[in-house]
Image 1 (cartoon, rainbow, N blue to C red):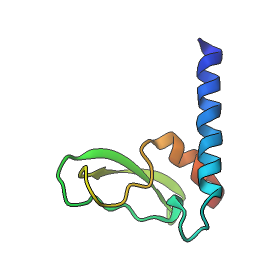
Image 2: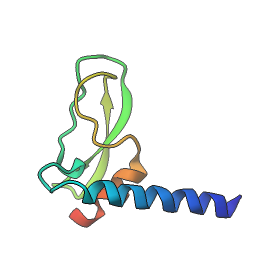
Image 3: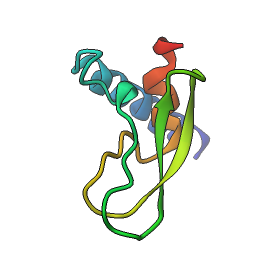
Image 4: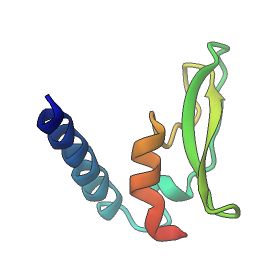
Length: 83
């Protein structure tokens, strides 16, 4: 089971690297400002704060808006190069 977890983590890191390389810095999720949208569901989502050089949580309303990342690990793995 431990090797299965390592494999899944490795896949997640590779997927996030492919995703981030697909976009220019202008379009990158690492440069997107979070936008909670119009709904009020308060779902935890994540974005990269370039000023502080780290990923942070914000509450997404559940519709519309901008949600750069759905979990902290993908945010960290994707945006590490922007530090």
